[in-house]
Length: 128
Length: 331
Image (tube, each protein chain N blue to C red):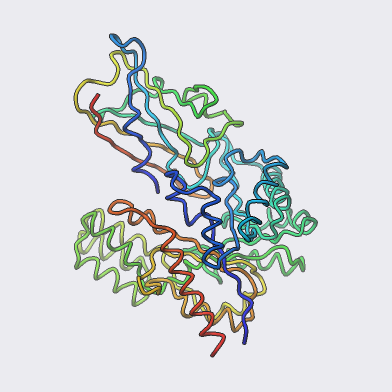
């Protein structure tokens, strides 16, 4: 229900040394009408120009320290509150490519009362 | 006949503005009180960022804040994360424990109604009745489309409540079950996504005639070779029941709170889709005394084209409630 707000395009930035970035990060919100325990965030798929980046390259931090997506599966004591920004970091040698590119995010959530997973999709054109 | 129906708002109604940081919970409470709807329904998992860890100081701050605006709590919307773990479902004991946790917080907040998600099993709720009775919290199973008042799944909860003779288990109807007309906001969104007007006309007319949804979905998907938006629109009919408002009186003893769902109000403060003009007279006739709690769910249908104004939508719904209640009282 909040898909189009899940990537904050103004926050996309390279990480690591300025002349040799090792990745990039951006701010995201949970596209759902309530907060959710991190163990129920099944996947955060990040793609550039339609090409998915490896799951292992991604970490998530809602403010309590970065976790890999595999670590999130058992982070039973942590929650991502409603409307709260969190940071996704992607390890990518060279950082986000120069020029205009499409950044997309798919959040896959395990919502207990729904018979199937819930997907939130967003795509923003980024020019760093 | 003077009605004792009370009016309120669910904070769910303002999710767009709260998500975007344009309204705080206090703004929502103040607005409800200002339009004569001081009953506040909360979703702790939405509105309390530290959930489930809520200190006594936080409880005090909430209660003080509501009192400051002349508002009061009406209902606590619980959730149950049966799929919290990837490897297995919660055991029955874990489910009961989670519901107990919510009943206790509900009671600490001074709230006497709890919305139970519809998928929670009646036998699990039966195990929670002693705690609900002890804390004097009514557990109302949300009767949400595509279920309806007389769906067999809902009747199971009624059967448990009758068998136990308890006043602390029942239902909590969501007015989406009284969708008499197809919401224009839905149609408009599908048109923007590429649904052809003639196909939209067909789907709306099929709903108007109350044709069982699977006929329409087959017609659109197979015979008309509908595009993605058209098939998606036809599939919304699976969740668009029009339950019989005349049966409200039979079930009124089992509910104390109503989620007054709506998708978009007309400028003249009428609802183009939900049959409030039939529901409210039935509630007044039944002598029902609970709260009509606004649940605006239109943001997701319009946010692609214009800014959402939840306050204006909720305001219009309450103008309608005032009018319909007064008319029913005078009848």
